[in-house]
Image (cartoon, rainbow, N blue to C red):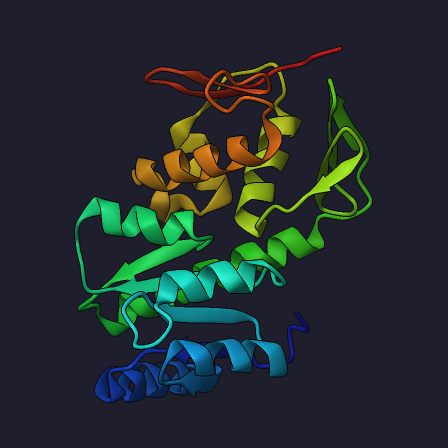
Length: 234
């Protein structure tokens, strides 16, 4: 994203009061905001607008946020923050499983909203800036830092930006144990260092895409109570 360009955020929520409040908070802090009142409208907006970030309510009429997120992930790697009124971890995990990068539990304050938005945009910009580096290979898995893609047996794997950041950090530290706190800090930011469920869900999702048998991982091993290791294979 051009530093001089206003970041454009899509806010999709069926609560008109919340929609207006979030829009006002973002606009007062220099963001361009487009809105959608349901899942169908949100999908159409993603297809027609040049966006930098999506705030997506998990409970919407027609298509709910999880289904919208899954469909967006079929064609876009834009950062997505799910908005949920439920505090149960399984509801947060469901949103992350659909392909979201982060979540925000209602009710939330303007400071928390803005912090999450800044963090998501910062992560996206860092990913876009990682260019010109070599390709890492372990066994049949290849991580191309310049193109920001992973391949297994030469075929590209469809990773979200968050999944690729995890893959990239593990590849840069291949053969070494990377702690959960280090991964969370590097991939999401220092304010996320205690949110281990974010990491668990994304590691599981990543294994499902790159491992021949996710239940018996060949590439990414868990070090119980410590973190994860990307194996160096010939």
